[in-house]
Length: 126
Image 1 (cartoon, rainbow, N blue to C red):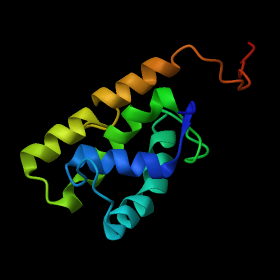
Image 2: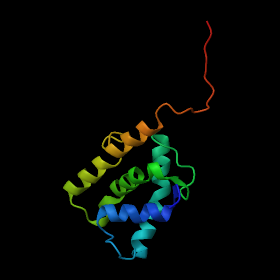
Image 3: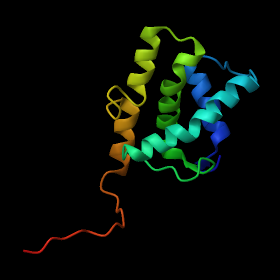
């Protein structure tokens, strides 16, 4: 297994977290396409919230993979007929409510804490 995972791996893992995909079962194309369409918006949301910036969904670092799968599962839970209690649990495990307070979001923030951003520091002289 390589150190990077693809968007197909992420979608299949998210569907497995939702209970839609069982072990050994092939993915329903309709379910796969729904999550694929939502994937770009979810990644943009994570970037806007300063949680993580996934520039290429076909090169996802392995350390981020399970947390991203939990976030994607939480964001797509309502389409797959999850009960309100299950949606609350999945969102809490993923992005959280309010966004950024879920366990996966906190884990990603912790992994990226202290990393250089290479941004210019704005200084104000008096």
